[in-house]
Length: 301
Image (tube, rainbow, N blue to C red; front, side, top):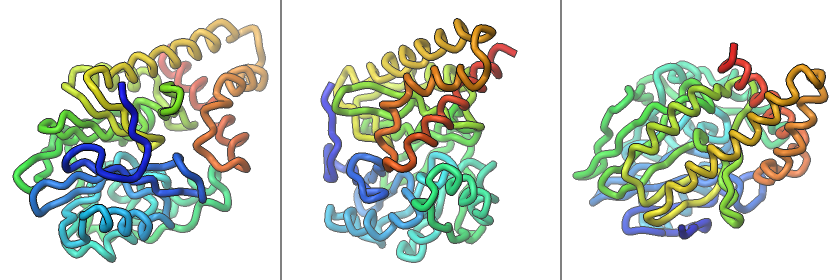
């Protein structure tokens, strides 16, 4: 399995951009796809990332006029944050998202408040997206890009509104956060199990759905692209990490009180916080630990 974790065209028509979120490399990435004279962007990064993303894509040959859609995987601020700003520079574009979150984009106060709890000073306010510019996407819906299609795949688990985007002709998937966060240098997948939205059972179901796809490229927002015939090994890595955490939770439930159990899970997840600014990492570990524990309890209740 090869890894791409820079900014550039890693396959004909497929572009990955490091948004340099929070002033960091390898924290949040977005994917671009160009077919003929039309293009699409997957996710929009943090609220202050739009200009950097669009400038990077333009240097790579994706002009503003060519972009027809900004397809969002879910409502979290690090994925949907720049959607409204992008539209100001993309005259031919719409925002695509799960129907549940369409209203939240039009009234983004809750998204911003949730983001501020986790990211603190790194979360800046979001502007509302006009309802007329939002396209609510059904499971299996096909979005035209030139003469090709991108398929919306409903993949809940990380959140209830999560969509991954499959480009069948390229054997490529922009997976959002449902598989987890990819530590490209060590080829390890960490759970993206944020409280309070993580659902373990739905994660497992979504993983089986992804496994059924023919994939050579799996692009992660956090962070990089797994490339090759064995790219789907990241699914095995993700499941293994989740199962290891599951054993810790099950073995210690009843033995440790709630606070101590959270601490045990936080220790395991400490490395997973490397994608966050240093001042946020302790809080991120807390959110992930609580999210995983609650996600397990939802499955077993």
